[in-house]
Length: 429
Image 1 (cartoon, rainbow, N blue to C red):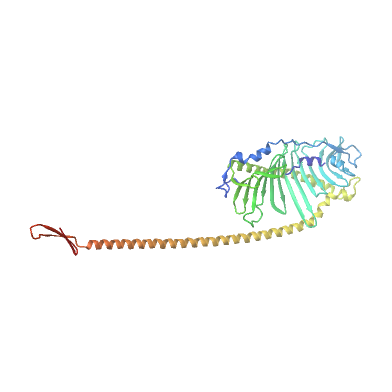
Image 2 (cartoon, rainbow, N blue to C red):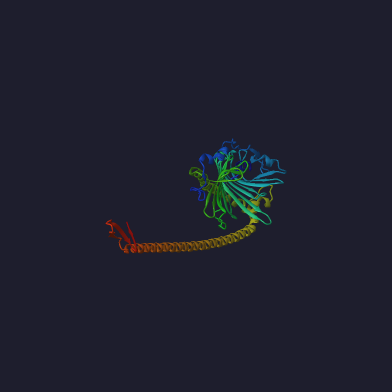
């Protein structure tokens, strides 16, 4: 039963259409330089998805031949047995029913509609793993491993309760478009990837902004074999800044990515968002099948030969154990979120007050600078006026002097002497 899902389930991941607000002075890189890491991953050989060998078991509660899908892992478990509460046709499990697989170490149940010919195309199924508290809704496509899925994982310990969801689509080449969310965490992860390269987008924009330097959105390129980031990255911060990084060694370099490469990453991100609509529609069909089956199996009259009532109806009451811790976790998260909102509001008010003080200081400094400038101008004007007045006075004084007088003097002897009198001084020759 789980062999199909184990083959399909991979590690399921509008930003930066503009320039980096803090990177206008950073080195601009080309599309080729930005895509070196990505191209190196894509150049590696990628094995094609292989469907596991079809293995069957005979349900212990069926007298007629009724092949029920299973796996080598289940057959190898201690005290393994399988039950099927649906019909049997032509030697195979058929129609709507529940596959119950139990051993000393595991308990998995699957609600499914078998088509009776061992063909798993276009099949809805819901898998419950009661040991690992996991539920997987899936709708297979026409060709393996094409499918839409919703995986729910519950962590329930003495001091901690968490729920996480992963939903999206996988195409026939094994490429997945998946969103990871949790009702107790504002962070959302969007992944567009294959077994060669994964484009990961982390969105924390719904978290109240307490720290302006906190990253609220990030884009990364991941090597799925090592789960490490490389190539380029983009980060958006609480203060509105957007920065581009080139991963070189241990120290990222701040760069400016070309518009074409930012558009390339944006398309990868949008593909994940667009896949959500198809996934939701397919999963709703699976949920409808689940509702119809549970209506039949949980009416108090349904029995399965060879199984006690508690085991055969566990699927009807299994979620009840999580109601109290879930409500407690909701209350705790709501309180923490409200505290963060209040802190963010206080930080915002403090920031606005600081900005107002800085603005007032700037205005005061501008006013002081303007007064000092005006005083300097006034001083220069006065000095200029004084200089002009002094020049005029000097000119008037010079103009008021009498013109030089020339008095002819004829000394004895008949020789002629010319004398010039300037003020109190007389010169003769």
